Image (cartoon, rainbow over all chains, first blue to last red; front, top):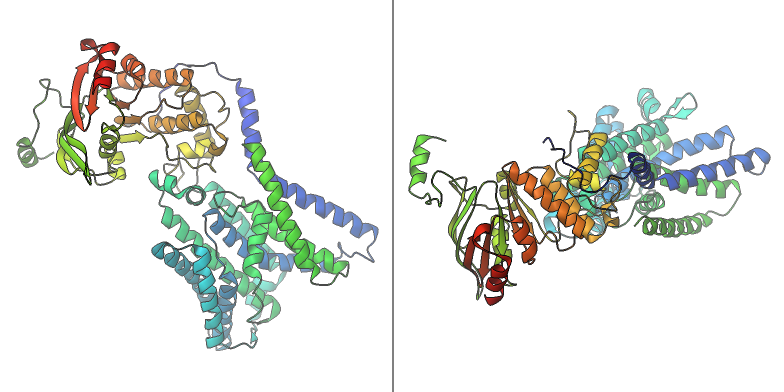
Length: 340
Length: 263
């Protein structure tokens, strides 16, 4: 693999200038815009919260803790959905998966199976549902949007068939509750899971060969496979991870709330896609950052939180998220055009 | 290679034009038909080690079909291929690549949403023991390859996205990728069509360097002046048949032009 050094044909641009432009391109691709946006809204909210704590209790311990408990329940599925979007695919069945996997886990645990084993089985079912979406999509060569629209209905029905429409209680033993919904100092366990998973996904997508293959296959499957990238394998792994993330979020939510309502995750698939779009991912695949997925989810929660604190009616949320999605997509499009 | 194998092969082995030199690649009586169109009507040719062979001919002469057969993309209907004297059948592009044949097409397979460095190393990433990529190393090599092999103006960094490059710059990235992962035989299908003059010069200089290191190239081109400057031997195809073959010392640009336009 060694490469022969050859005489220069054209004069070299100064090394310093090359390093500068390299840094510029890397920053452009790092998801810095979303970080700046996130920090701006946080600073603004904190300042307003400090000035008038009575009308806007943003910096109160209760509000912070609620945020750190709620963000992971969207953020963890968004990590999976985002990875899959980068690979050029979608999963609309994550809400159905989140409910089905966690209800199976809760039923098994409530019927005497070790809760750890039940949770592991729940994760396995989630990953299996994701993989099945992948197999159907790739075997039948149909868009994953269609596949998962179908499997969403199938797994929703499966939940009703096995369990029914009522809430499923989940009362985990204290050790399990501690690691899934406990507090570590002031940090909820859910948030630590989210933080750890974000780092794992960052390492996988941005540092590992598999991540490079996921980006490549989502960007241009033909070109990736021409270069020896196992495209379907990369996509299948992304499908499996998406399913596992959905199940993990369902399990954490079950432990946090103490029961699972079968209709509680209807909005999850589109919210996760929205979080990813706000975080700079494209619907066409091949682009995005883990930082964007995580902060996109945090921003959606932030809108919800601010509206709640200001006493706005609940339906305002969807309107504001809608504006943010369109605004974010438009801004990213402009940024991309300027890059090329 | 076992002796038994040698004997079975011996019967099929072609006779070599020069005593004692086994050609790198030899094609014998290759035929290919697409429905009613007979694209190749029995073409025989060979590529020696350390030579640059020009594959010339007008549109529809069969050049592209021949390139596709050599790169394993389409199988021939009849005829045989020998790689270093051994018979081979290429069932896929991957098999040709494994043999050491790298083809650079006009529309080379690049991923627009990845950086230049990541495209060069796509599918062949430099990784550590757990599969984690050596970003710094890949960037440094990519930067070096782009500066030295295909000195393309405008690619100021390996971190640039390929989607933001011009057609010629993209082709340069494809060429850089092929020459960095040194193959024994490079097949370049109209590589200079989108390149600026300086970039073409740089590419030719590199092909000469590769030749001095014992690597061979097949250059498919419409530009006879370019071909004459760099190639050692010339083959002209016309209507699926090989109509002219000469080494550089035996011919001239005028004769090549005459032969191609007459065919």
